[in-house]
Length: 313
Image (cartoon, rainbow, N blue to C red; front, top):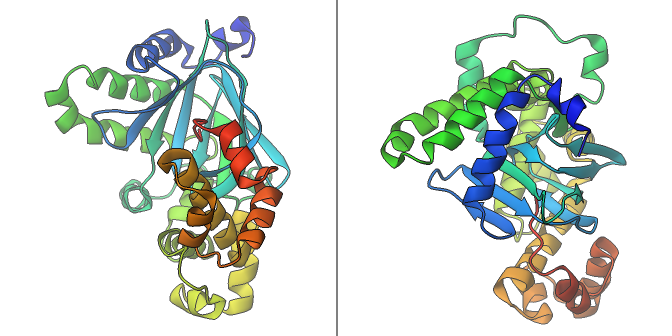
């Protein structure tokens, strides 16, 4: 965790002690905890974790205590009380909690991002008041980024957390608080990246739709030509742009989704490796074991035993 004096100078730091206390109170054990507000979940981990391939869904992650890293295409993003993480499309990445102890566990809130909600908010809010600088648009297409926290964003997150104490208020005001949080991200340091991926009919938004389609139909045979036509792109342009956003080809992306789903079935569902392999479309157990080991670093049975219970974010 960054030095206390560094955090104390950060806008929004006044909200951190209360935010951490509220997360800790609602997470009596390590893991991912659902809340009464469906898009919001809370995470607690009492120690560092191994560097593990995981799938990040579209969401905002605000850390109240500790720190974690996510690596995509050789670039590592650290999110902690100074920096929040935005995942704008489903992405297979490598994640690791790097700062946590039993006395000061890693504590964070995760807020799911609905692209339709973001697009509607963009349409209502209009163009940003200040265009991003040329330097800020480096790596514009990537669906993962970290940005500095600010006081308006942290205040909005804290208000949403307080609403968990009043269920009647949460039902009415929760969606409003979530909307404000998304607005603060859109008007923040790197909100233009989320705009590009959520704005209707840009190349990146088309890729976001293709990613969502792959996420829903990852067990089905993949036709690159058909998927490209679905989002109104040529095959060559689609392939190039897909890799720019996700850092891998559509076929690699589908393979990763299948392997991650097999891992989830074994970890959370107790399914045997052979059954999980067949469930996600592998006919050859040896091919499944080989590709699983290449991604996760160990054969299915031994890796599952070692990694059981490790949450994704």
